[in-house]
Length: 249
Image (cartoon, rainbow, N blue to C red; front, side, top):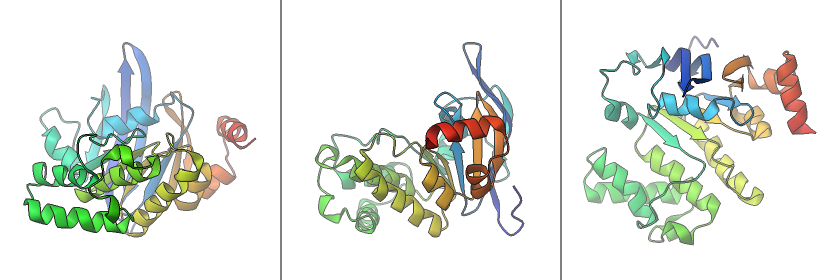
């Protein structure tokens, strides 16, 4: 993927990962430029979530390298907590703290990770909640919010830390269909604001609309990659064609 005018913020080269002798990632390469969305598509078990977890250092790669900017974050000497301050990861299951209000879920990370004073953290949280239409729910606990509201709050909790890269792992999969749209609209807005995103998704129409680059993974390998319109609209590889036809039927 070549984008001469944009800054390369993340790249992975020949990443391998196995669990108990079973290969899950088999030499995966990835490039993410400033302000881009790279979409990962593929069947369950293809390696999408594992790749995101390797990028966030929740899993240690067996071979290969991952760079955040110029830093090799797979170097065993790296400060993993420092790296994670710059890479936000949002899961499909929200993972909001049930015993904290929506505002507190956002301010906790700002205070503990960024060291921001409580008053400033509250101001930032309130601004973020207003941006996603949740100001009135700031003092509510997560179980009082819809799934879509919880997921938007979880995304904004990650965005609050101003990460260099935002990783989204099937963030609409646990939502009722009518709630998916509001989360996708937030992702669209983040892209417009210049956020760099790697997104594992089954929302192919959305990926076609907003992603700059698509990687199709199958059994831990990249079978096909390219601009979203090409991969999703005119795939060249038989395996990609089979996968897309099955989903689109």
